[in-house]
Image: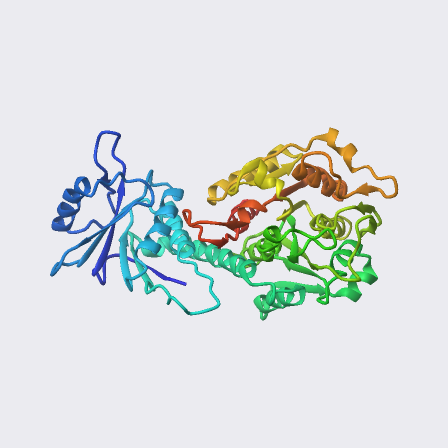
Length: 486
C-alpha cells in the first residue's frame, strides 16, 4: 500500500498538489485555503492557471502543470468539490490514478482537516488498489504521499483510522477477487486463522464437516454436500473488556456457486467467485474493530460452502433441517445462500444471544434489478436501527436503500411438507429471501438487519474509490456503525 505521511511543511516539493473548489456557476474554480500555504509565486501561478485549465473544482478533476527548472517541478490542481469527506475521497482516488507514474507527491490540506484527511487517505489507498496474479503491465510507481497539515500529531489518529479502514476493505477485496481454483472453504478459514494469529484478543473457532453434522447445521451441510471441498463455519470473536453491546455479524460465504443441480447459465456463473463477499466483509470488519480497539463485542459467523454439482449434491425438492430444528423445502438449489445463513442466524440467536444481529449476503440478482449496481438493499423492522446503519453506510461512502418487509408475501413461504419454502417462485425475489431469513431471527426479530449486497459487491468499471472487480462493500459502513456503539 501507499505510504502516507503527515508533515508540517513540504520536505520534497518536487510534485505539489493544491486543492481546488468550485467558486460559483459563473466564476472559475478557486484554490482552497490551506493550513500551510504555498509560496506566493506558486499561488499566483496556480490562480492564473485555473481559468486557462477550465477547472470547475468538481471532486476528482485533476490537472498537471509542468514547471521546468522551478520548485516544485510539477504542480497538480485537484478538484475536491464541496470539500466534505466524500469529495476528498473521490479526489484522493482520482489523484492516485492520475499520479501513478510519480514516485512521490506532496498535497496540502486546509486548517480543518479531519474529514479531508480521512477522505483523502481512504481515496488514495482504495483508488490505488490493484489485484493481479501476474506482474505483467507493471505496478504503479507512486509509493509515497506527504500530506501537509497544521498539526500532524493531532491528526495522526485520523490517519490511523483511515488506514485501518482501507486495509480491511482491501483485504475483503483480495478475498473476494481470489479465483475459486484457490479459494475453497478450507482455504478461506485458513486465511482468517492467519489474520488472527498472535492476537490474544481475537478468538477463532472453525467447525469442519464432522462438527457441523454433530451440531445439526443441516443447511450448510446440504449446500456443501456436492463438493469435494467440505464446508466450514468460521466463528470469530472480538471481546474487548467492558463492552456493553454485543453484535453478531453473519456473512454468506459461498466460495463458488454453480447453482448446484439447478445449474446457472455460463454468463451468470463466471463471476461466482464473488458469492462469498458478505463473509469477506464481516470478517474484515471484525478484524478492523479489533485493530481500532472499538469498545463493542463483535462476533462474526461465516458459513462457508461450495455449491457444486455431483452425485452427493442436494436436490430440488429436498427438505433441509436447519440448526435449531426448523425445516425448509428447496425446489431451487441455486437459492442456496439463504440456507447457510439460516443455520448461522439460528445458532447466533440460540447460543450467542447478542443484542443486535446483522447479516450481509450476495443473496439475489433481484437486488440489482430493483436498485441498480451501486446500492445494497437493506431490510429491518427497527426504524432506529435501520436509520443508524444507513447513516453510517452513507458517511463511509457506500450506498444502501431500505426496502419493505411486506407481510403479505409471507404466504409464499408456505410448504406442504416442511415448515418453510425457501425458494418460492412468487413474490419479489429480494424481499421474499429477506422474509425467509426473518423466520430464523427468533426474539431478535426487532433487532435484526439484513443487507442484500449482491449488486454493489462488484464493480464493472472505475468509479470514485472503486476499481474494476471486488469492492469490499460493507467493511467501511460496518466499521463506522460499530464505532458508534461503544
